[in-house]
Image 1 (cartoon, helix red, strand yellow):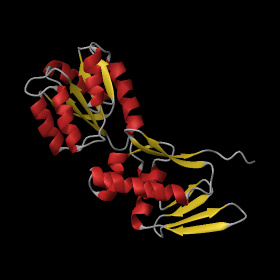
Image 2 (cartoon, helix red, strand yellow):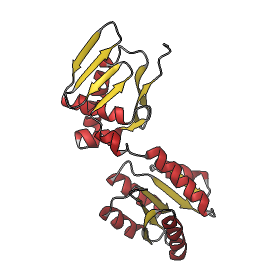
Image 3 (tube, one colour):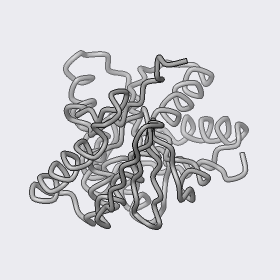
Image 4 (tube, rainbow, N blue to C red):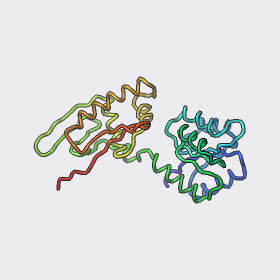
Length: 240
């Protein structure tokens, strides 16, 4: 990988933590180890991590409390819990706090590696090529992001819409996440600079506007994914 994925591992068993660090570094991950919840939070604040792995039972601040604090700072960074507990209540609590996965001890290094790869794949940000793209094809539409022009063409007619700056920003993010979930919190922070009730309602209004613009193509829809965000779905046309 050209740029190493940065992982924050918070594990109070120093020997076990060192073993995990060595294994993950052998697999080309850059790992920072913290040995308690408080140190983990301070380390997270100072770095920019692609994934967090938190042990649940730790001194000073347990993994659940740490995850809650991290979620207040970053709502999208993936979190995996490591725990000796297998109680259903604890697992549910972990997911309610925003965990992406939950691994019960003991586990093999290979299992952890595969789970990390799966979580990163699900939560992967658009690659640089998509981020730098200026024009997008969306079904029968063509979207010119710099000019903010959305053009519908079906061979019979051509319809153009001039989008507002926020409409264009939101549509570009949908194009970057096409057929995948665009996290509401990510869009709000990128476009509105904050995630709160009022900006969320504003985003809903803009989504409604984009649905109206895209209604000429029956193979396109923007779906509300409850509790997560939205998804721009494009089905392949049945036409030959």
